[in-house]
Length: 212
Image 1 (cartoon, rainbow, N blue to C red):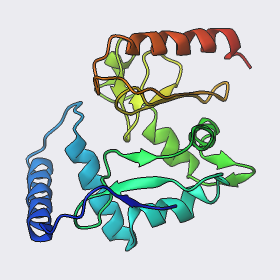
Image 2: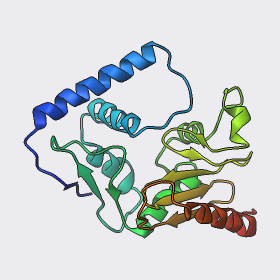
Image 3: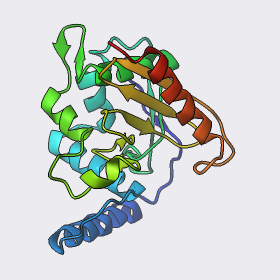
Image 4: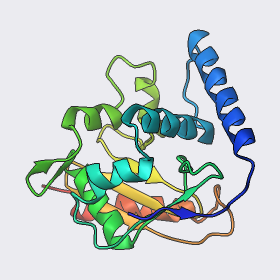
C-alpha cells in the first residue's frame, strides 16, 4: 500500500494542537454522556488517531498488513495524509474497483476470505447490526441506521453500506453474499438526487438475485 501526500504544509504544530483540541472535545462529550445517532467526519478522524496510537503504526501500514495483503489486492492503494503525515481517516482512500469488490466480499462473508478469518466475525456483526435492546431498534426498519463507520440499510434483513462522497458506495448483503460497488464523480459530494437511483438499483439486485 502506498500513501499519497496531497499537501506538504509546514504547519505541523498547528495540526498537532488541533488534534489535542479534538481529543479533549470528545473526551468531554463522552464524559458528559452525549447520546444519539450522529455522523461527523470529526468522529472518523478521532478514531483514526486512536487506532494509529494504539497499534503504534500508521493506519496505512496497519490496514495493509491486517487486511489489504490478506485479500490479495491486485494493486497498491493510496491514502491522503495531512501535513503531519497522519492519514485523513474520514475519507480519501483510493483503490481499484476490483479491490473494493474484494473488500466488500470479505465483509459479506462476515470477515472471512479464502478460509481465513481476517476480521473477527462477532466484531463485524456488532458493527453492522442494531442490537435488539438498542434505542435505535424501532427506527432501523423505517430509516437508515449507523453502525461502526457503516450505514445500516432499512428493514429487518441485515444489509449495510460503505458510503463515500461524490457517489462512491459499497453495498453489502451478507445473507446472499451479494455486493455492489458503485463509483461516480458527482458534482455534489452528498445529497445528489441521483443517489436514490443507486439505492433503488441495489434493492432490485437483491430482489432478483438475493435468495439462497
